[in-house]
Length: 119
Image (cartoon, one colour):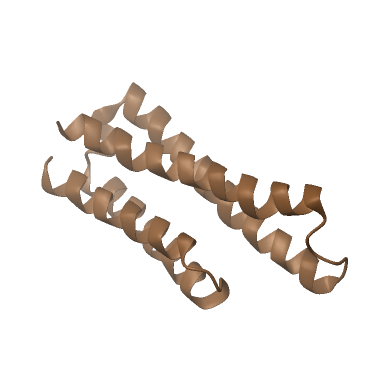
């Protein structure tokens, strides 16, 4: 059961980061929803870095869990994953005006805590 919770945590992070990039960056860019300017560049830059950071960390976690689950089960790695989730949540609270990234961060943190509790 624990192995599937670990997969769920990093899979959730990968999926939600991909969806956020598609919705917040690609779709708005392709539809031309934002006028060119420095605010648009900052918006796309923040959302791209945020979403692609989640995707890369999620893929790294999935790969590590797939190849060496005992490494992911260690306390330092679990605390690192929780710290990353808290950092994404802090960025979402401070710099993003909509609630979906906040929900994504909370769900990831809760799944990591559940994985830590079931190891």
